Length: 296
Image 1 (cartoon, rainbow, N blue to C red):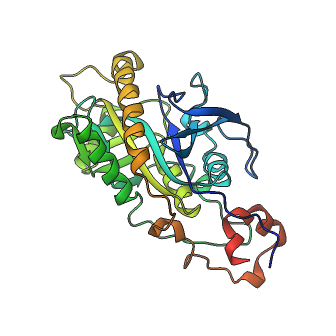
Image 2: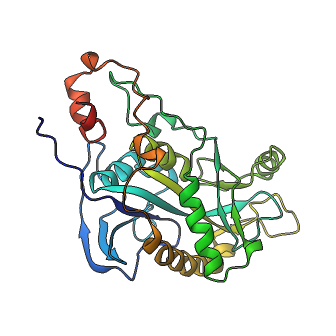
């Protein structure tokens, strides 16, 4: 027997991206301030119910869009959600298109990521005496993507505007791409470009959370010379449309979400821990007890 807390009931987490700073339609909403070993998350987390399920909503950039992509504390965000019992995350994001088939207002559920970030050390919970190497060949959850794709079609979104697959290249920002960068990413075969999702996906895997990105195309980055280069002014209308669609999609999938956290992502640490337990430093073990409880 040990004195570690029991797992809460598996819950659903929504991370809101650009334009999505609040989530209407939740029953009994309550704001929760969560502190983690990595500090505070981007904002208070809103807990509520929808279709009989517990749902937690966190605005990635904070309400009012106050955080640069490189200022987002992804470790605190994911750890906070995991501490509340979240085992599935839908991460809503605005992205640029790098290929002509992905048009503004299209929905893309990327299957893969490519890392062009400079802050990779912040994309893991491990270190300081405990090493883990999670499998990440398939960084997003196929069943969760399928639920989202099917929901989009049920809502009447044309099939040509819903893409289940593709590769998201993650840059640092906050500036948008140069034309040379955009053209290079396009020629390498990447489909979307954004500034936030890769760190979330890596940390969700370490936290044994099934993760999917719900990406809404707002622009063609700047590779398409016949189009205006991307700017906040050119994407605001698309953002407003996308927020409405995102909320409708979430309401559509929640009643169909599984109850048991028994997907492969939910045991990602099973064969990932490289450091024998007798070598684990007490301080690091304490810091990671939420993730390591079943191994203690």
